[in-house]
Image 1 (cartoon, helix red, strand yellow):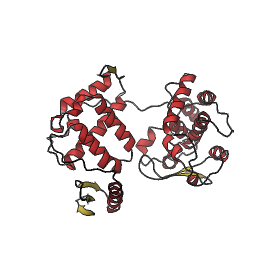
Image 2: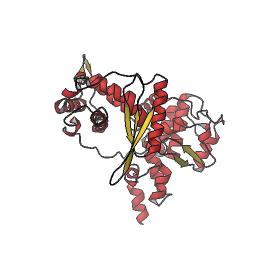
Image 3: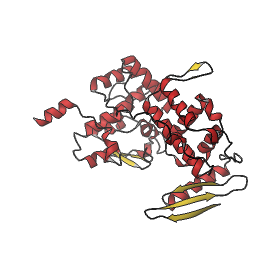
Image 4: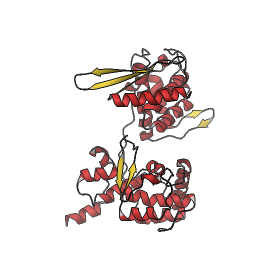
Length: 349
């Protein structure tokens, strides 16, 4: 049974949920509101009843870092992180590449953390397999995931670490924001490689990816939001996105071209997926098509930048533009706004 503790600070209050169940260790988490805490507790208790949260046994300073990461993913990240799949991929990828994660948590310090960062940037080897170097952006995401894990170890498990080791290492310099867009000629090349003809009903998986390409340019929706879209989410002039990256629902307005794309599709029941392609297959098809076109640097997510930059010509108010994309702060919005310098010069007259 869950219990709740409300803490009133000088500038904010928080609610701590505590779950005690026979056969399990105590699980706790803190939230900004009591509603969030109760929702989390209900989900956690349901998972415990279904046997999806098992008791990992006692933990302490000598528990291996890898074992604690597994516990973090099972008991906390899955229930709290909105981007759980990404967090899981980042952390399990790291302990699959570096043996230092077999060390007890009390012996995982600055040197071990720095070795992971350096190894990822230069390319590392394990059991004769050579892993390619990754970008600074990837390493920054891994550092953030590790830092969150160590904070959880200290605050939730109360394992007496002297300091979060990620605060002692040199994180890579944050790369410049991408400015890649997709012009009409590039879109035509991609559609050709995908075998999709504008205005037709998609049938094959490749054609569905082509349809999604055009729909992304018209709506600025992320790939995951498009693939998660159900027939019941589609309305006359907007698409409802229940769960976005920032955790808030978003109603994406539909242009006449976006509505025309949707009109091509047969209307299923409300719970039926609009796009019958899974994320893994979608990614493989997209990468193969861009390689065929010689557009290896083009990512599907760049279509969100293309859509945002186009919409900026319509929505001159930045708050309206943020409503269109679903951003909740203007700083994040600016990473997706990449106007053409020639268009800016023409606007000056």
